[in-house]
Structures are given as structure tokens and as C-alpha cells.
Amino acid sequence: MRGNRRPATDLRDPATGDVELNPLFARPGEATQLPRFALPPGESLPETAYQIVHDEAMLDGNARLNLATFVGTWMDEQSSRLYALSFEKNMVDKDEYPQTAAIESRCWTMLANLWHAPDPHAAVGTSTIGSSEACMLGGLTMKRRWQHARRAAGQPTDRPNLVMSSAVQVCWEKFCNYFDVEPRFVPITLDHKVLDGHDLASYVDENTIGVVAIMGVTYTGMYEPVARIAEALDRIEESTGLDVPIHVDGASGAMVAPFLQPDLEWDFRIARVASINTSGHKYGLVYPGLGWIVWRDKARVPADLIFDVSYLGGDMPTLGLNFSRPGAQVLLQYYMFLRLGYDGFRKVQQATQDVAHYLAAEIAKIKALALWNDGSDIPVFAWRLRDGHTANWNLYHLSDKLRMRGWLVPAYPMPAGLADITVQRVVVRNGLSHDLAEALITDIRAAIAYLDAVTGPMPPADEQPGFHH
Image (cartoon, rainbow, N blue to C red; front, side, top):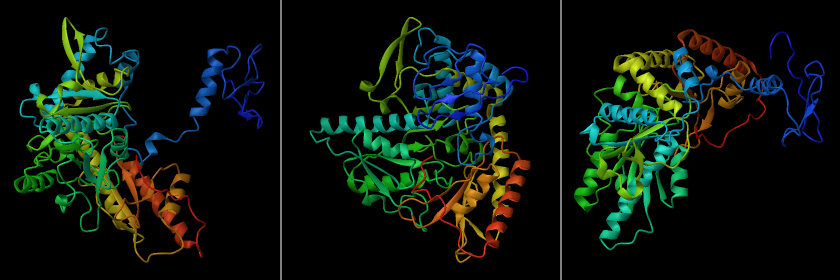
């Protein structure tokens, strides 16, 4: 609120859960108690409602110190101004907001170009709420094309399956659940830390709608070698005649690899890659609420999944699971594309990776910890507790100690195949400066020194069953 007004005091009635207001905060004539789980009977002044919400939001963590999330937490002042000017734009209403619709098409065409589509203007793409929706669309188009081919051949379509690493993000498990597809998880091992084509023939059959390759595994940030996966599928096709497409889940890596590893072939340069998704709100450097998916060409998108809407006197194809959704993030993405260009994105991603490399190098110097990877793919890396270092504490205790300093550095078990191994992971994003990284290392060293000084076992920490962010 304005001036020196004191914040609301949250006095909760244990019986009702109501929010009681300190008399110094409430205005004359206003209720001094507001229900928490039902609409208040009357109005409040906007300043009062604002302060109540503001004070509750203040209890959230500091987004800049959240090293668990891949989602962007910082944009520049011009972005914020543009955001404020476009809050009301509804992406689905292409008749009312035709220029926003045109900008959306420009953005995914730029991505098709960045990802080496044979003809970017012949590609098909769309914005989405995030990568999860984009993954759903990628899986759905693969399933529908498989169904059409099977029906045309007079074969059953009741047992589709999708092959992927056991380290996939939870959205792929949701896709298989929601769309009645059998998930076939290839377990990772110490010898095969990612899906790399090894033993792929044991999982692929005539009911396989596709294979998911991840550019930036959620657990560790490592790339899955798309070219080697494609080569394994080529060998399967030679021996069985099965032509299995690849969807690349590039939620993070599809906006990193083109700038930091431009010679790495993972995208539409590989003929078997049918579609690619990414998160605009991750390394696309936009605030939360934006994903993208691009298909190689129109043949990869069954016509019965596309709906036409009137657009500037013609028809514009649309494909999505959501209807009304914000258009502001699309404009922010276009702003970032124009603002940075290829060279600007390269500089930003390189600076981010430099911080990741610094942190990984410092972690490697700490005798209690053993690096899993060093952030050389996307700027994400993980470590484990070194075998034999201690039986008194684990990485969950270290995570708790860091949280006391404001840092969110998650600890979690690895997926099936390595579930007995616990790691901690750091996601370095734009906004994590070298100075902040130095402060993190100082706090990690101090936390470990404290834990190592404990003479007996620490109480059980809050262990998580898995990690799906």
C-alpha cells in the first residue's frame, strides 16, 4: 500500500481458516476478517486486496535463486513494458488480433529455419502454452499418422506404443496415459546414461508410433545423440521394413544447440526427425507460458488434426489442445528474436554456459562431491555424493542447508535403471551471474563443512520419490 501503512497481519482463525486484518491495516468501514476459502460477502478497497495478495506472494521463494527450474525468471525493462501492453491479447482470437497471429507464424518459421527444415516456409508450426502441450501435439501427430497407415493396410490400431528413455520428462508419461499409448521406457545405466540407440531393436515393433529423443535430459542436462538413434532406426528399417519417426524433445536444448553446438546434427538435418518442440520460456528467454513445435513439412501433420479459421479474408490452419491462451508471450518471443538475433542468443547462451562450467569446475574440487556431468551440453549439470565420503548425511541434507540460505538446489533419485543413485542438479539460466555463482559455491562449501562436522547421523531429510520438473 501507499505511504507507511503497515502490512496485513495474517491472524488465522484455526476453526475457519479466515484471514484477520490488524486494526491498523483495515480501513474504517471495512471488514476485519476475510474468508480464505469462500468469496467475501462484500467489497474491499483495491489497496487492501492488493496488499493482502502482495503479502502472501512475498512468502514465495526468490526466483533468481531457484536453481531447480528451467523456466526463465528475468527479462529486460522493454520486455516488461511490452508485456504490460499486451496482457489482454488472446492468442486463439486470430480475427481480432491478426497481427499477433502473423507474428506467431513468423516466430515458428524462424525456428524452422534455425532447425534446418528443408523448406522453412513449407514447415508447419504453432505456439503452445509450454513444451508439455507441444510434446502432446508431437506425440498425437505421430499416433494419428501411424493409425492412418495401419488402417490403410487393414491392420489393427489398438496397441500403439512410444519408445523413450526412462529419464523423460513427466509430460511424456502424461501423453501416454491421456492418449492410450503404451510407454516403452529404455532404462539408463552407467554405461548408457542417455538413450543412445543401444538395444533399441528390443523395444521397437510394428506398433511403435515413434521414438522420443531428448536434447537436454531433465535429470542431468545431457543431450541424447539423435543421429545415433536415427542410425539405429535405419538399421531396424533395413531388417524389418519399419519406418519409425523421431520426435525431438528440445524443451531446453533446441534453443541452446543451434548457438553453442552449431555443427551438431540433431535437428531436421536428420531425415528421420519429424518434429521438434522447445520452450520459449526456458532458453528461449521469455517469461513463463510459451512453447513451440515445428513439423518438418505438412505431410507430417494429418489433415484431420488441423482446423481452419478465418484470417484476413482467408483460412489459417490451427492445431492445439488449448483454446483461449495469452498472446503476450508470443510478442515477447518475437521481441527477443529481434532484440538478440543469432549472435545475441549465442552470447547469452555462451555466458550462461561459462557460469555452468565455472560452477562444475568448483564442485569438482570439493572432495565430498563427484560430478555426473559438467554442463557442456545445455548449461545444466549434476553431482552425487562421493562413495564412502560419509554415512552421516546425504544430498537431501545438503539441499536443506542450502535452502536456509535461499538457494533451491534439488536432490532426487535418478530414474529407473539408476534409481539407487541420488544426485543434485543446478540449472544455470540467464540472470545467474558469476558473482551469484561464487556466492553459491561459498554456501555449498560452508554447508558441507557444517555437515561434515556433525559427529552422528543427521535426522532423516525430506527425500523426494522422483523428479519431474
